[in-house]
Amino acid sequence: MFLGIDIGTTSVSAVILDKRKRCRAAASQAHRADIATAADRSEQNPDKILKTADRVVRALALELRSRVKAIGVTGQMHSLLLLDRQGRPLTPLITWQDRRCLQDHFIHSLQHKTGYALDSGYGLASLAWLKANQCLPRKTFSAATIADYLIARLIGSSKPFIDPTNAASWGCFDLERLSWDDAALRRLDIQSAWLPPIVPCGTLAGQLLDKKALQWRVPAGLPVTVALGDNQASLLATLKHPEEELALTLGTGAQISALTQSEQKWATRKGKTWELRPYPGNRHLLTAAALNGGSAWAWLANTLAGWMKEMGVQPPAQEFIFRRLNRLGLAANDALTFEPYLRGERWDADLRAAVHGIRWNNVQLGAWSRSLAKGIFTNLYNMLPAEILRNRKRLMASGNALRRNPLLRKMAEQVFQLPLVMSRQQEEAACGAARNAMSMLGNMGQSG
Image (cartoon, rainbow, N blue to C red; front, side, top):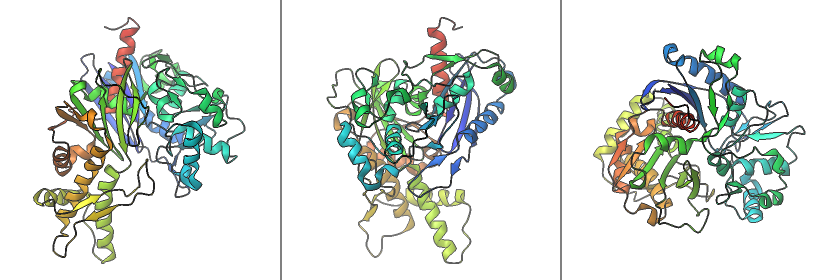
């Protein structure tokens, strides 16, 4: 058995896979770790997240936990946490949703200095902002993602490691050399000593501490892999024929990813709306990540409920609202066009949402919901370079928003002109982390 843990933006999930890669147990719980702060910031309590991870692992069947052979971890990419010399947090977790670097065009200055298309919420952008605004804690010893921090606590290390999938998500990462770009770091006035050492995907991070094994009731001394980026972890669990498929994930945001074809050469490390990312096996993944995904879809239901309250009408349960939006949207036509830039976008924070084609008699709720659903995927489609779309045969989809909303699935198929296949596994990122642990154990010569 192999344990996989995923620290998401809103919840922590854990799974146990058997050696045939079948999911034998799964559990998930909201961590509710958000910290009330300024409107342009997104911060979370890291230790509250780790306590949730403890509860989620203990929720898995004890009989299966007792047979675990290795542990894999994944988590929200781009996130940044600063630690002291003892590995204790000095800051809240700054998440990928953080927008402070948009103040006074700070992010544009970072892009100009480094030549990298850094975005607000990227780990090194957040670190540069803290340094420039004299907010960097004096005792800063190391930076980490939330998943790397969890692993350091599991194995008793004060200096986390990071693999290329997470390092690349921070920015200023040399994709060819698989290392930090030291020249770019100097231009940001960031000391390379603050950054975790980069090790290959699937590397052994260390052994599980005895006290944690006792708390989780798993075997002592289990090997723990270095954390894998959640985008790559989801794909490990989702893709069946990688070069023929597009991987679609709808969570708080939305992502569309494809392994690059061997004959395709990409001269730039990042386009305006997409980026190349490392992938296990020394391969590259081309990913377009939109801010406006599941959160845009939820916005419609929340707005509708808010309007009803303003009219003095008690709104129905959110689940009922989503069911009705699906039914009405599936029966509607494509009269409206919705540009769903409710949160702006990474490549242009000033983008605003818009609806086109409105006439006096066509603003029914079904047309509204259909156009928003279609707009979410049209945005993703337009973010990809045309050549990456060639010869793809299906959309391999994951995420509860797609699983629960037939209108979203239909609009994804309509926009991409490909059949959509939902992943059979839930908690795909956690399953990918478990598979990463399985591969590590095989590479160590201990499989079976």
